Amino acid sequence: MIEVIKNLSNEEYHKRKEVGKSDLDKINKSMDHYFAPPKEPTEKMEFGSAFHTMILEPDKFEKLYAKGPVEDKRSKKIWEEARAENPGKTLLKVKEWEALHKMKEKTEKHPRFPKYFEQGEPEVSVFWDMQDVGCKCRPDWLINDGEYIIDLKTSADASEEGFPRAINNFRYHVQDAWYTVGVKRALRISRPEFVFIVVENVEPYSIGIYVLDQASKDEGWQVADKNLRRYVDYYNKPEEERFSGYSPDAVEVSLPRYGFKETIY
Image (cartoon, rainbow, N blue to C red; front, side, top):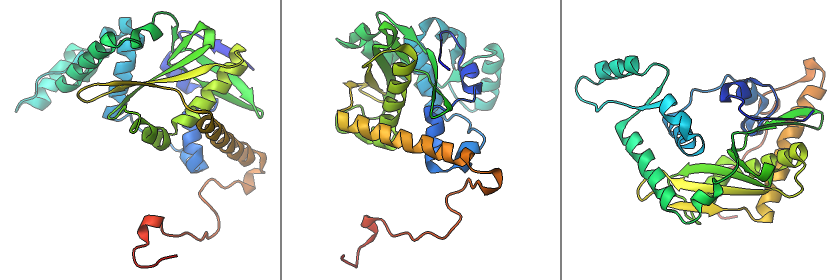
């Protein structure tokens, strides 16, 4: 099964049951986490979504978002009034609204940033089969039908020292690997280039553009493959033998290295 769908809504994409990168993140913890109901989006996630829309689909931004009221002692009431005046829109706090526009101004002045978005397609939904499992990904921006996969991130630290920490913490190397294999299989691109474009969400709103080295890409694929095999192994077992938690048996654990303060090994 291979499908490449343009203009599929975010809601319709997430309704589909194929395994995506966010599913791999849950499976990495346990199958219990995979089966758990989705969490409500945080303010940071909503802010990131708003920035994506502003940059990738600017014609939709004003239809989906509105500037919230200046807060005062009547905050609850004025927010209720503002929501009534903007039905169907997500209201952003004044600080968030101002930050978004400052970030956009910074991207427009960057020597390289605008060039990535001169041509291409936003939010293309890609579906393929692997290990007899339906898989999916939704790149932020595809250039030349998948020759370049652009991933737009917001971060408190977009520096060469700071962003690698985010790569590790949020498993962006797994995302790189997963999206790359999906584009390879579905769009028949032999060597797609995955590019992270990172815009700071705090002053001074600096921008970093990065590609992963091959060792990090290889690690990302090994982890993604391990997560997918856990999923496959779970469903290959008879239903009565399936276990979705961490472990059915006692497991020996140890303090992390920084916990050893009095004993030297």
